[in-house]
Length: 303
Ligand SMILES: Cc1cc2nc3c(=O)[nH]c(=O)nc-3n(C[C@H](O)[C@H](O)[C@H](O)COP(=O)(O)OP(=O)(O)OC[C@H]3O[C@@H](n4cnc5c(N)ncnc54)[C@H](O)[C@@H]3O)c2cc1C
Image 1 (cartoon, rainbow, N blue to C red):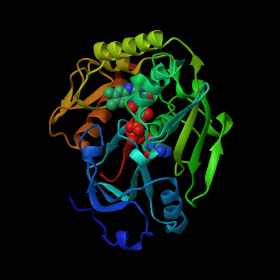
Image 2: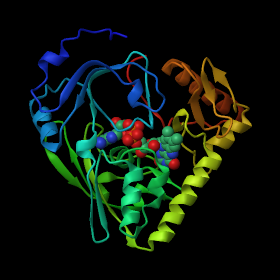
Image 3: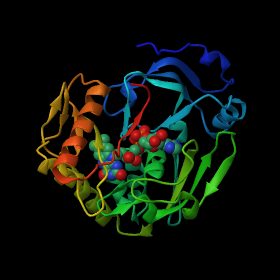
Image 4: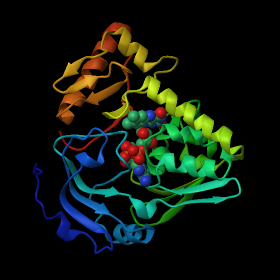
């Protein structure tokens, strides 16, 4: 699909070491496996490449960063400007005593495993979050009774002018599934405090988390995880179930039978199908219970 704007952005972008891809499909980079392309996709080779890019980038060019797209719905018209994908060059994990530092491109699961390998406990919950450290920092990701804020020590982030900042808990301003960090800052790394533990016990906890996921969530499907945030004192899935939305469908978009706060792309659902379904659920829940659900999944791009 072509974007409805001129395609000259690429020519205006700064020279970098990494790769630019024009009109690049994003669906394969997003868990829902649907949605439009990026006007330009940029895969930087590391922190310095990002710095070079931002120092010379025209301020009016929109920039969006993605991890592995496990909390994203990319609308069918695609994303204007530059979409930055942090990949392997940002995947380093180092351990120093009880501190675990991971690049923003490292997966949460890899970080959980590294901590376990070093007999460090406290990061097992990351086994239950299928994103990257960048996404986990941005979303204050949490699972099974713990969240990033609980173990957070510091993060580094680069701003739109190419300046790198070190952030402590105050600067992060963590709250439920969000942070206060300016939306255009890109996390480069995060440092987390663990506590010495027993390798076997840590592994057992991670196995329990995985088993609980298998038991309660749809697995190996095209989904974005929890669609709506839990309202204060309520469970989004319960409100959705009580409103009779379990199994509701629009096109190939479906409310999961197994966990009704999950939307699933059962085949060739468009992003519009999925967003329309989410909005239909919100309307029905509002009518039934008076609660206005808020999207946890981020919707980006043009309809
Ligand atoms: C099956 C399934 C189960 C899930 N279970 C959970 C769960 O238990 N708990 C939970 O919290 N979440 C859960 N999620 C949601 C998702 O995994 C988390 O929100 C995760 O932190 C998103 O990480 P990501 O790398 O995929 O980010 P993306 O989805 O790619 O992006 C999400 C947001 O983070 C921003 N972002 C990504 N990388 C960076 C960066 N380097 N710097 C700045 N911003 C960045 C993006 O711009 C976007 O705003 C689940 C999702 C799925 C599909």
